Image (cartoon, rainbow, N blue to C red; front, side):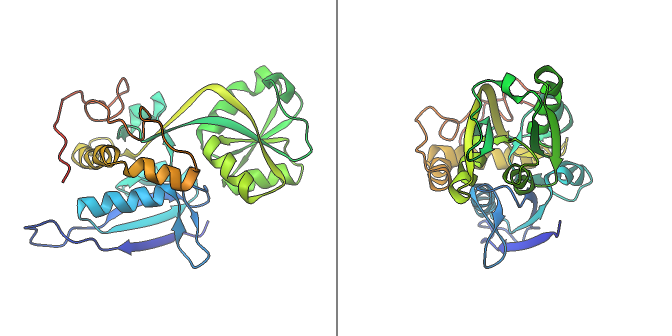
Length: 277
């Protein structure tokens, strides 16, 4: 996929800074609407793009956003190309053992999307003999591989979420599996796509991953996220892009203790005061 390297803005340097800081280098999946997707006039837009821009602004850093296929993001992060990933990345235990996560900023669930006119799914057993399309390298692919034999479906992997949706629309696959925010947004844009069965026992907690050892930057980014929760910024952005108001006890509004996701590798339980200006 063609890389879109975007120098989005240069924020004012913090008071007393003597030299301009290096830009934050952030990788996203630029085909994952409404989190990050192309603008007609060029560049990318979405919930996660707004989050990244606000984080950089509050840190007093310029930012360069690179939009690539999701499957290449984690290898590129580990190779030192990015400071952190701004794409929605679910906090699995395997990832938390190999990456350093901020605390989560949003919770979603797995949902299937089907072509209008197809029989709705009421149970996973109805997937037997059918094909499920997923974005390559995603948590949805992992779920599909763990459950394909049990429920008797085949898996089709695609380099982007739109390609996985297209497989459903053209009949190559019966259903696409993705996050519910992505499925609902796609259905508002594509009349032939219908949100279908939600996997109620799934809980996708999205966070920003960094390389192991990059603790100082992780804590800085998380400090900003905590302030954005307290002043309602994350909740406002979620309502802007997803259409629903966030409950008072939602992850978008509630800072978590310590640094990193509680109960996962990399969590630092040290208490720290909020440093919101």
